[in-house]
Amino acid sequence: MAYNTELYANYTEAQVSPRGIAILAVFLTTGEHDNAAFKTLQERFFIIDKPDSCTDIENFPLADLLPESTDHFITYSGSLTQPGCRETVQWVIINKPIYISHQQVHMRT
Image (tube, rainbow, N blue to C red; front, side, top):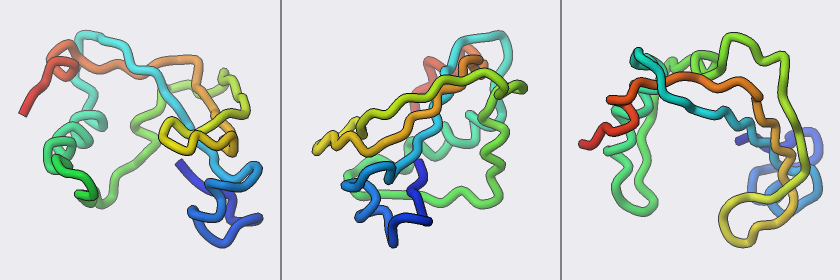
């Protein structure tokens, strides 16, 4: 998620304003092999176990969470998925999935 720094001073202002937020969405599907980038995130999921908790991941290449080709995508104007659901988001959805293993899908603590 990112906000439009050319139009708005901060995220709080952007989330309630037209064309304020951009979200890039990538589909996941199961395959035979672990996805190393997803595994890095997964290891941190369990640290964030209470409201308002957070964790840092340093030197994480976001490109590793994208499919090899990002040439095909769709966009639409919509809203955030949390209350107040303001229609201030430009969604970009990559048409090709990334793959994670069956084990990663079922991973618990």
